[in-house]
Length: 166
Image (cartoon, rainbow, N blue to C red; front, top):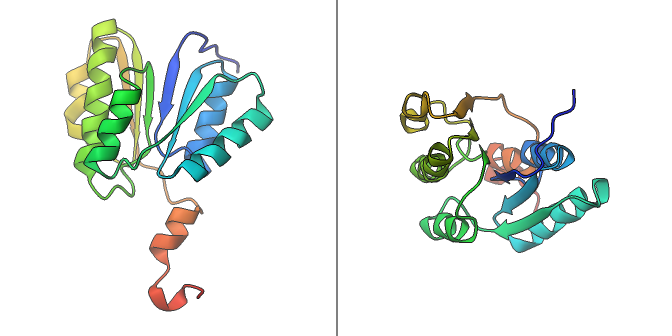
């Protein structure tokens, strides 16, 4: 199945590896302008290279901002004030689920005003009751609670101090 997201902007939080990067690549392939996000500039730069290697004509930008912090969340909102599609991939491991919900609420408000948007929250099934709030606005809301995937962050969280290599 082929879809066209030409003219749409997609923001994928936590998109420097694993599921987030795969989603970002798929959105770029569908023609969306994609905003990649990760905690460090080095990881963002590496993810940008990976997307460009697969889709040289992709319209992509990268923003390093730690969305587990108030400052990082504010930085992202300032640099990307609106988006048509938000894949909020923070809830599973977010140090502050309230920041993940704040981010979703911020972007959902603009989507509702424009009467079109796609909001997907991975790992935070409630997301502040956004599903009910967005009913009838033209914005679709999906909360997905996936099982664990083997990714650097998962391995780091699951590994005890005594098991970590020195």
